[in-house]
Length: 208
Image (cartoon, rainbow, N blue to C red; front, top):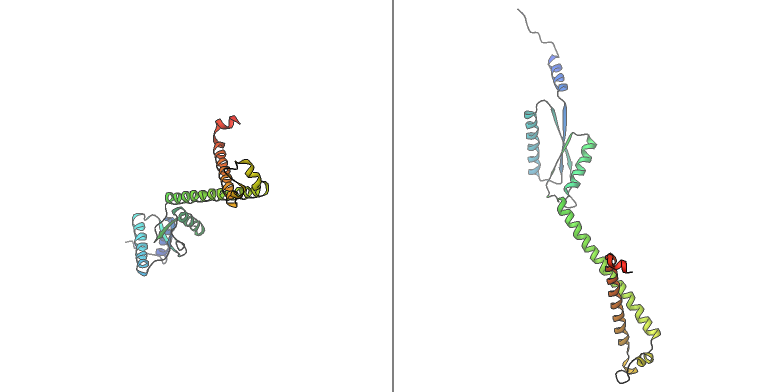
């Protein structure tokens, strides 16, 4: 009659051997943002259920769940999904996890909506820059026209260009200089804008 004799420490040895046979897989569960007390309790339940399902479905692996709380993520506003993935990848590599799962209590910005916002901001900025440049150019041309008219064209000289019946020296006032300077600055700005638009026209480039 044979007897099964269990040696002391054999159970611990079997457990260690079994653990060595199962490769460990470590999953980082990143809890991003701020959660209420009820939400934190729900997350604990999710963690336990998640680990239980993994062990039940894939018992050949040693599943390990690590919780990482990141309250700084999402505090500045809505996060872009690609930016959140980048942070999760950095934390996964830092802690040498096999996988990283992010749980966040915010609505993420998609790449397409973020791209559309960037395009809209770029276009508005470009329009603002162009309008500012046009206004500055017109102001410079108006100032130069005023100075040229005041220094080079006296009322006596201007009255000689017109018929005495139509306009006299007394009719030439500073308002006349302002009107002429406005006209010259506007025409100059228009010519410059037309010239810039012709730069991309190849048939006009061949004529020059």
